[in-house]
Image (cartoon, rainbow, N blue to C red):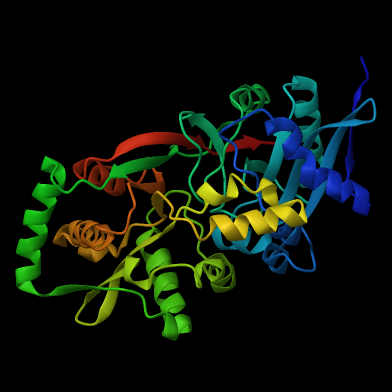
Length: 376
């Protein structure tokens, strides 16, 4: 059997091999949502990717007998390491055949890259982005992932843990929420929300997209202050947030991007965006020109689901029913728009407020992801 050899990506052809390798892994997986190649290509380009403004990265391919059998990226996020006093090497873009030798060789390559830079741990998987498709799927293979959520084969868990990785934190989970307001959970929430509205102290509004820069500033403030208590908190950089939000600016319904305010100041954020993975799953990552035509046609069709990526409330308002108000207002606004369910993802199991609130709304956990760390 040929030995596995891992080499860094150096040529344009190797770069394309790196980008297209996932099609080899998931070609027979009906749940996989292919990444959009133009977006992924820009993300790994040092001249275009926003990550490279705060860090460095190298991309590797594992070869066996001249054929690719795996990929990985090793990266140093200098800004986050300095902020948190860590020496993490972030790994990502981990894709591998069911081959323990290939997986070990890929992790060894990432570890060697990290050690050469004085880093002390491997942490991931994150694909140069702490919010997009991170982690290894541990539970939930009955439906495709929602927007910005990942998907991995069942054997990835054993490959990662077999190398010695340990869970870096509690798992991240996704919930599915039905929209039938006649259920006991929604009725109870509606009654509580009505009582809160009578006080009039907390108000809910939609997004003002015409004041885009101000809204981004508000979201940045709410994100960093509302999640600072989490054990693995990584402060958002404005540039990274701007890049994350920009693609949705032209496609969101501003009435479904909710802000909670107290005396005119933002205290909560609850954004529902179309679950575009319903489209992305069918357009082959935009590999070919005809995929763009199909995507344009599909984008005009009505989607079945929305995705809510954040339930943010400032800590000093946690006990004032802000979450219930946001859930109830969102439910009211969604009615009659043709959606059948809402994805709520991803939230940490170590952040109990959100899972408890989701459970009270009748939500069901449907996916679980795990992030790992290994000392070098």
